[in-house]
Image 1 (cartoon, one colour):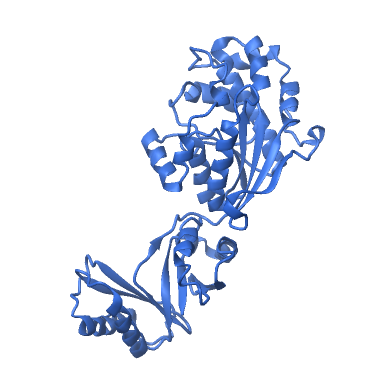
Image 2 (spheres, helix red, strand yellow):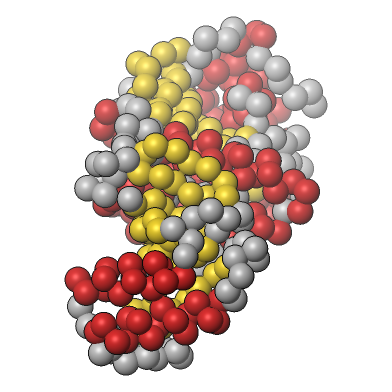
Length: 415
């Protein structure tokens, strides 16, 4: 009978709070493996045991793929169940390795989770290793084995496995609260969102577009990116905010060199209102220092001062190549590089400022009715919800809809 042994890494350091974190991880694994032949997911002596049904072995590739994306998992392995008897363990492992290709060297790595099992780990390794060597003629290599056979002895069960699969680490979904990410459609912001997901935050997304002035391409990209990120957090919400009309007002009123900063300040105000509605405690952006004109320290300060919520910038010190590597790793890169009509390039001045002076943007905005612009954008917000794996082909679980909360009743953050 196959099972999956899941080790949860950093959760082991959570002390008295560990049971709550573990229970959240159990719930997430059950949801992620929905629709597959999984009989149970249970915590057991410092690890989780996922018991597979009769078809679970044939579904291993899909099970492995889903588990590899779940935050909170350090590593996992498909394991074979055996009774906690040393002679039986040694015989079963020796029979199982007969179907494995001969490695350049092997070792046994045993862990005795329950000390009531009277035989210590080194003795388990010696006995089982000798039996495997006698059955196969393989050479032992303790320092750099090509094959490491894991054995875990628990209270009433034992398991062995041939390969550990890496997890993404971090904390289980939802254990760090909710945040709202400004999703541009480029390479950076999906990676920023993923980094917060990996730290246990549930992310809602806000995308600003300029349809019908520009095409729907950026909205399509944003939807696809959220679908991909939903594979990691299982449920997502995307707010699509029309922004072209606001940009037209800015162009008519704001000096060219400040327009990008004012665009961003308006985005922050709108995103903050939506974040409060969603119960989020922080905003997230894909900013990296100096990457573009709006991301100098002076401009980041000018943009961030309009928000009362904390602004998290997990990529702030990263090089573009590092961010790109993460985008490839999480599967968003190919979508992010699709050319689109982005609202960030609409009405962009030729020489935007890289050093907005303190108070300069605030003075320029006096020529705008900022509150009216924010309210007009919120009145046109469209909401998409996504669920994985219940939704076939990762499509929205419900059709796109208008924001169903009256704009006049949105809980804003007072100045």
